[in-house]
Image (cartoon, rainbow over all chains, first blue to last red; front, side, top):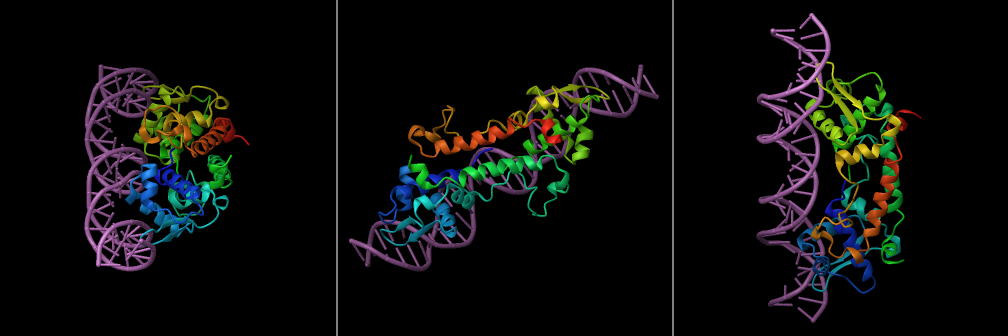
Length: 135
Length: 135
DNA sequence: TTATTTCCGAGTATTCCACTTGGATTTTAA
DNA sequence: TTAAAATCCAAGTGGAATACTCGGAAATAA
């Protein structure tokens, strides 16, 4: 059970933006070099982050990205969900119409997966970028 | 971030064994039919579960599998770890020699991944098969 | 006007998942 | 003794997802 690179790279990239918050835009190239990521891959992640409203972009030379809100106001949960989709260990809960769990009502593991998802959410939704840098 | 079918099927299969604990061996065919899984795929999972010491097998006609211990003494954590490997969201912690996280000491996200892993472990290591059936 | 940057859509190599296949062996029951 | 039922074992496979790359177009600062 592992997070994909999207989530991991994404959080680290956002940390980089948080570090330079208030100092103008940071380019993908700079972030990619610092963290040793592929910059064309980073582009994709930032496109997603932008659509999610977590960053703003400035095009052209000297352009780049800045956080859309204060680092204390952006949680890890928002970043991860934007890049990886919702936190659900099994798709037995909400109605995707999948036949995976027809017997969802009587399923004994359903509560288990929900408890785990909730506990993950509880952590990531209560940790901001500021928290990661801070204490 | 989703659990693979190994973990999900595995826990459900073990629940099936727990339900019939004390009534002699249960065959893969029976479990697969009940849960609507592929039985040849189930075979693989049970092979792993057996190597992990969670089930015992009885070969030949009228054979099958039984839990190696009491349902109250087998945790969901043991099952999931046997089938899915260790719970680690990123491989920055223990020394696999991977170059992924050379700067592990100063990595700000390291504590985050660890906190999440710990909270997952806390749930799955404290929930037994008995718990799943019971209350 | 040229460098630099984001933007966008598509393509691709590799890995992983979720199985399947084809047997060999063990045991029970007729 | 033989047939059926079951585990055991190793390998193969198709499809999907991951982790990228590539080729431009558009915007902006110097």
